[in-house]
Structure formats: structure tokens, C-alpha cells
Image 1 (cartoon, rainbow, N blue to C red):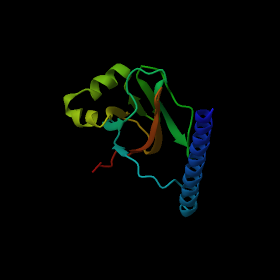
Image 2: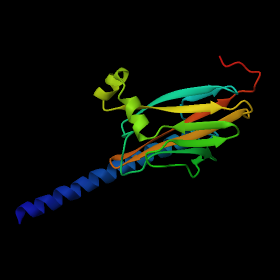
Image 3: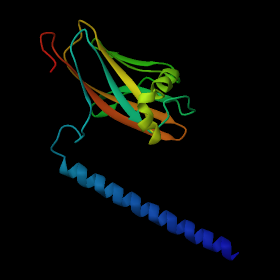
Length: 177
């Protein structure tokens, strides 16, 4: 009986600690939001792919989530509109592509992503329980210049990982430097 009472007490204290941590995290987010309220976009530092019509660029990324087979569904890819990801594409295990205005963004399927992540050059990542994968951005010859904000997520049975990146499509006459 005493063991059960101690377990209940410890569980209650654990929930109290979790609640305090959630309040502190929420307050930090509120302070950041207030500090950056004047900005049109969130104050993020994001990777940028600069591309000209007719080019292909590859963005290497890392994640602690699995890039292989998972019950969680794996990768999804969507465009960010008005600050939020719109309904994205997700096909468990297969290559995922998103197209707009002559730009195609592709994330490899499970087997290709695992093969890439297992390359010997990524041994240092493996030691840190990280996996590498590639995002390929292709601009057709008639791609429309402008900025595209993208969201990528990896839903796994052990958790979710996500990030954003930007694509800047230059006019045909511009030089990428």
C-alpha cells in the first residue's frame, strides 16, 4: 500500500514538473512572438536553394528520424502558404514530388534514402544517430521566377521531424553567384 502511495505521489510531482516546463516553454514562445511581431515572416534561418531555369540543385539534409520504412508514413512535402503548410504529398515508401510554376521538388523513397544515408562518407552522422537524405529541386526552362517556401516532414513511429526551406527561382538572364 505504501509503495502505491509513493508511486502516485511521484507521478503527480512528475506531472507538475511537466506542466511547469510546458508553461515556461509557452512563455518563451510568447516572448519571441511579441519581439518579432513587426516581421511579416517568422524569424527563421532557413536553407535557400538558388536556381536558374534549366538547372537542377540538390539540397543535402539530416534528420534523427528514420529515412527508411516506418509505420508513421515517412516523408511528406508541401508548400507554405500564408505561413502554414498546405496539404502536402505523402506516399509511404515512394518518391514524393511537388510541382509549381515549372519547379519540381523531389524527396527520395525509403530504399533510395536509406542507400544514400548508408554511404561511407556519412559515417560521422551515423555515429550521432543522424541520417542524411537529399531534396532535389529542378527548374524547367520556362520556370517562373520568384520565391517558393517549402515544408518537409518525416513522420515516424518514434517521433516527427520537420523543417522548412526556400527556393529562389531567378529570371532566365540572372546569374546565380
